[in-house]
Length: 163
Image 1 (cartoon, helix red, strand yellow):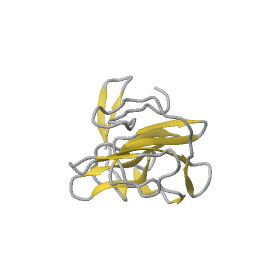
Image 2 (cartoon, helix red, strand yellow; image 1 turned 90 degrees about the vertical axis):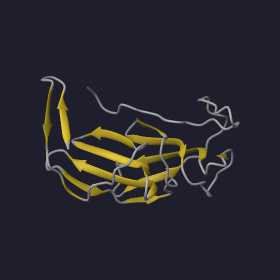
Image 3 (cartoon, rainbow, N blue to C red; image 1 turned 60 degrees about the horizontal axis):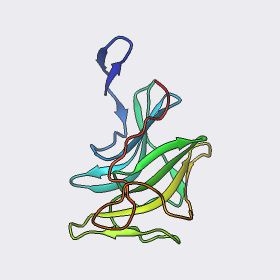
């Protein structure tokens, strides 16, 4: 793992061990309490993921985070943010979810891409971490894809933590 130290402008390399995540794009990430985490993403041969993997920045050891609850379908390119010790995941691209709640929609395209407006939370205060599928009302006001009517997040980046 390469780490950039902002205060010195210097890059350093640190070998990691453990259950390293596969190379993905469109994953969500965070830094919190000495851990770097990754959730979801897309790999060109294994497809979309909904795995949660964590790197301890003291030992540089990766581990798969066991979770319980209503897990989101595998996806990439979702919005991901932290609010009151809970991480929230909105939308994304991936296989069509089959567990839609009232008001949730999926836009499917001939290319095989599918976008949704589902909302999930991931709570790390419980052990194991717990996923929840959140029921909402109304329509989120995000980017609207001109090919369809479903508000969708095409790509999103969030800074979690402090600089």
